[in-house]
Length: 413
Ligand code: EPZ
View 1 (spheres, rainbow, N blue to C red):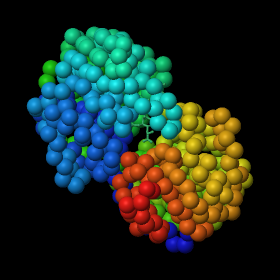
View 2: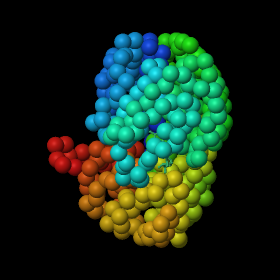
View 3: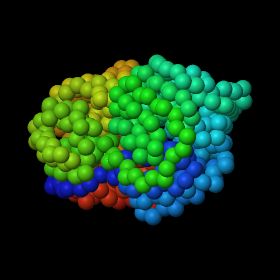
View 4: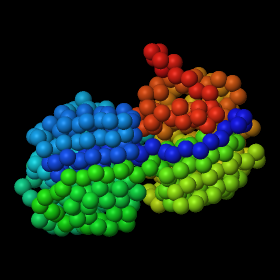
């Protein structure tokens, strides 16, 4: 147990709400002011894409001012698409405003192939013509048609892309089996504040009635529920105590219940979460599911926590086909984990030990950080750029709570 890991803090703005909302700033052809924007590389890349399309973006700490009045571009640069696969949702906003868009297949990543077949199938259903003959995908649309789109899977990105593509026009689009994540509710709130007509966000049926024009807007991004869960799990694994402010406990209730099952004390009052870990942690079982189920993004962090919980724990990853790569690195630290397809079987150990490890992806990298804090001795993590993609100053936040993390600038890792 890391001695004396405790403190109180706010969490940053949500990465996964910021990215679709940045795409939505294309739609009004005016000025949008965003507050509580996390300073992370995924946001920087999205800003580069908006600027490459002709938007003007001013950044002042956590405030962004995006002016999309003179935007003319409709092609997302391939090199930027490759850096950020979720930039595919910018296509929906470009099509809604300009009636066309061109983008390349986003690369897969370390957690799975991450196809976009559901995005394209939904686009075709609402009247977008798609030419996939080249390495690029060329979309053209004279008019979005009123129709119902039934998603085969409640894909977050496909839901967001279809909402963005349907905001402007004279149609009515209904998305069934829509994703219900809180980030989609934040996107819909942002769009409706601009004058769009999006109803049902947060349920599995979302209706978008096209509008002619949208207004200027000022908007504050919701708190990052995955960062909140990460900080709670960092505290749970080190035997510490934490109070998180300006969060929404409802957004991560499956995590809170599972942490209680493992022996942690968890209390929630309005927008705060209090957690006190326990010297005698016991294992449990988790299965990732679309919202409101256990979020896949916190599976790596929770799996890491379970490596020091007594007994045998079982984790089933139902969303991404390759989200256990980080466990190879955890085993170097003494974790006892066996992977059988979608399932990880974990035998709790008393304590992990430090080692030289390598980040494999964003959440896997953050998992190695919390493992390193709880471990005996020193842990050196390479490829931390993965972690910087999605967490704002995570090392500083963890050090504020009592960790001892230093960055070795200028070295490969
Ligand atoms: C979003 O990714 C999030 N990213 C992910 O967070 C999150 O893990 C995921 O939703 C699920 O909650 C952002 O919001 C930027 P999906 P997305 O479409 O939209 C398959 C993080 O760590 N699928 O819901 O890409 C897909 O392969 C990231 O912050 C298709 O088969 O997720 C996956 O297995 C990681 N065809 C499953 O659906 C498609 O056309 C869920 O994907 C689209 C998706």
